[in-house]
Structure formats: structure tokens, C-alpha cells
Image 1 (cartoon, rainbow, N blue to C red):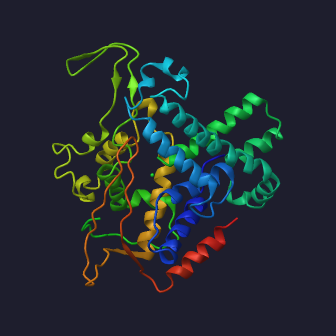
Image 2 (cartoon, rainbow, N blue to C red):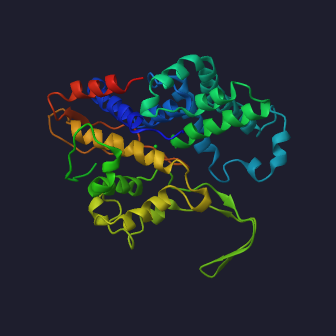
Image 3 (cartoon, helix red, strand yellow):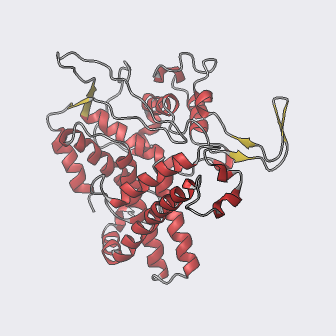
Length: 357
């Protein structure tokens, strides 16, 4: 019921590429992912980056990235410190926790209340588009129950739907693009496009969004490569090293999709690391794959991505820095994006017009 349709992916990628031409200097991946998630989960369309349904969850994820750094706050090891008075020197973490808690609360309840207030419009639209299998998670659940939820059910629903958005927001070289496609692609085409799959996989490996996994504590003694690890030991998986080990990936800092030789078995080794481990693996894997594939395919079909030029008109490759922490995102950098087709903007507008609910 809640699976995003090809229509949702195509609509989002079309809107993203359309902004390449209208806002060529403001290109960010966050709104792309958030648009699909907010649409499928809550039934709303994001208007821009200042939309509270985007800006507040983004701030919450930034807070999480800071809070998740192991050992950053002493209270993690001595929970009794949370009872210190806020005025006491060294208790600044309590003010941060209060601020972060408010952001988290708002990011969960604000879109939920929006859905509650717009139920009649959402349900009417869903009925009109039922033939295209457009289902929206929260509104469908509320409609099914007639809005009659116990306080505990509402609490669970608010925070579980919020986790969908929060989990999804965690998201330049001389590579010659070997594949172009038409704008109206199908998600089912993905298996027949090995270079695109390799390109996406290399993105996961080259600049992984989660360079350090979330810290976990062992619930029993374990032995790893001859080392005894005691119960209670905090373990932090170094995902960055695993994906940049030169013994496994020669010249690891070079963006090179050809390294996988089109083999899905080799690509899977990357995604198994980039999306987490075992039962803690990211449940949004297929959602992320569909969104990224959609945006990349639409971009390749309609745009040429070029290096920026300096004051002398010469091209240069900008230095791109990435933030540190649990979640790593690129800093701002310049890039030139040009339309590949004279009718690219018209086609993108057509996609949005046809797919808009």
C-alpha cells in the first residue's frame, strides 16, 4: 500500500531537473529525497527548502549527527548527569538537549497535523488517482481507522512516520557517461542498465553518507579475528575504511564505476556496507535506490554537467569538502548544468503537469 510508484519518482526527478535551469546555482540533494518521502508518507508536496516539513527535519538530522558522535557528551556514560540543574557550569548539554528535543518534536508532529487537517483533500485526490495506484501511508491509515486512534496509537503513528522522513535525509571526475536515456524511462529498466547501476554504486562507495556507523554496545562477549571483545564494549564500524581499502578498491579516492565490471555481486558488496549491517540495515534501501536512479536517469537524459569557469573563462575542478560526523554531506560547490535538448524544459514541465496530483 505504501510503496512509492514510478509516478512519484518521475515527478520528483522531473521537478529536480527543472530547477537545474531555473536555479542553476542552488542544487541540493536533500529536497529531492524529502519531496518523495513527504509525498508518499504525508501526502504533501514540498514547495521549497524553507518549507517547515523540510527545514525542521533537516535541522533535526543535523542535531542527530552531532549527538551521535561517541563520547561527545559525558552524560552518555553517566546518565545521572541529566539531573543536574541547567544553571550549573558544565550543564550546557541540557540546553542543547532541550533545543534538539523541540526540533525533533516539531519535525514529527508538524507534518502529521498537516495530514490530519487536509484529509478530505488527500482522500478525494487518492480516489481520483486510484487507477494509478497512488497510496499515501499516513492518510490511508487514518482513513482506514476513521481518525479514531487511541493516544498510544497516535503516538506510535506520529513517530514511526517521522522515522521514514528522518531516515531518508541522512542523502566529479573524468567519467565518460556511456549511457543516455529518454525522459520517460521505467524503473523496470534498471536491470538492463549496468553502467548506471555501477555509477550509483560508486557514489555510495566514493563518498558514503555514513562514514562511521552508529555506535552499538555488545550484549555479550565476542571474538573477532582472535581479539576478545567484552560485553558492554562500544563498537563503531568504520564504514569509510571498508569502502576505501586499497586492497579491495585500488586507487580508492578515484571515482571509477568501471571497477565493478558490471557485476552485481561486486556492487552488492558496497551497498551491503553503505546501507548498514544485518538487522540494523537501512529499511529505506529500495526507496533510496528508486529515488536516486530516477534523478540520475532524468539528469542524464536532459542535462550536461560541466565544470565551472573562472574569471578567465577557463574550466576548473572545484575542491569539494564534506562535513564530518555520523552523517557526511558535501559543502557548497560551483557547477555548470546545461540543457542537452532544446525541448528539455518543455519536456520536464510536461512530466510535472501530467504527474501532478
